[in-house]
Picture 1 (cartoon, protein in one colour):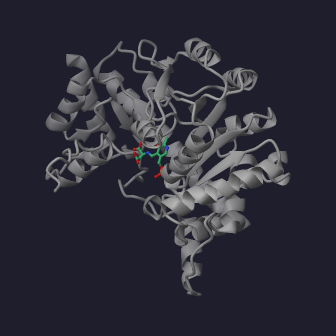
Picture 2: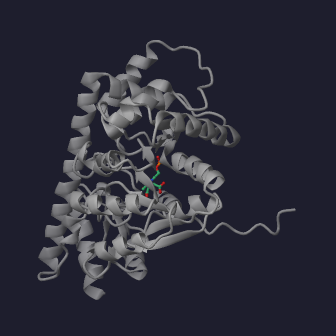
Length: 399
Ligand code: KET
């Protein structure tokens, strides 16, 4: 019956992470998957989340289905976090927000909606992007193309080429953009570049689809939402999928959202109806637990402050580790320009190592980075950073 089924080649991120778990070597170091580990190399439970969860356990109640759109308090909290509670788009009710199965689920529900209502559009993603973007949009039936983004020569942004490519797209093209902490490169647009890009998007009547999975890991919670707020200010209609996997360290709870910023409240009502329909035919309604935790933290001022402080400490710790890695590599390879280790922001660094060098890092040094050369800097800590610096210096010296 199933002999014709293709063997699954595995996923470039999740399968490598599983290989890491199976590796018997003592000193192995996981810089593959985009997960924040603490200074002891553990997956943290944030204190604000622990407090909310402890409180929740003191009154265990019934567990009905959530509505197709998810937990109402959570949806409100998502809008306020992304746009600011006082933003006109929030207060006027022109944003359609649903709770989704992580950021991935948000991307998928939005993609299904778009395929139904914009069947002639194509999708444009940055070159490179998170591998699953292409898979999710192709899975929804779209043709997925790339626009120029990362410049391997400067290890920075090809902004002019990006802008002219986007300027040439037909109206209603769907343009996927990373709101902050670009995955996999760690290379972002600055506010002036966003402003320029948004003007092109508005003039060309394009349909931006933002992915914000690392809010708070770049420059700050509000700073990292700059593009969302500027797009809403410019009167552009757009999609945004958000995730709390990383910023709340709630990976397995699958807490994310999809928001569609519409021209007015009436259109937001129409959109939310069809998002409900897309949810119903996929998985009916989202799970309860994670959404209650996130809503409780974001809507309790003391817990929100505590969470923001913890997130700041995570962001700062990554920056310290980037600096130590940079110092370590430069000490071994004086004169080599590896400033990108500190210039790139968020969890990821695109290290420029080839697939062969990535393989050598794994087999010879027990250091796991993706084949693309992407490293998760949030896996570095005081105990492993010197070994990682030595390993990088060793493979870069040969390359
Ligand atoms: N968007 C981006 C840009 C992203 O990096 C991830 C996860 C997600 C969405 C998915 O978030 P979630 O809420 O967990 O569905 N990225 C890491 C893990 C993965 O590949 O699934 C990673 O890139 O390692």
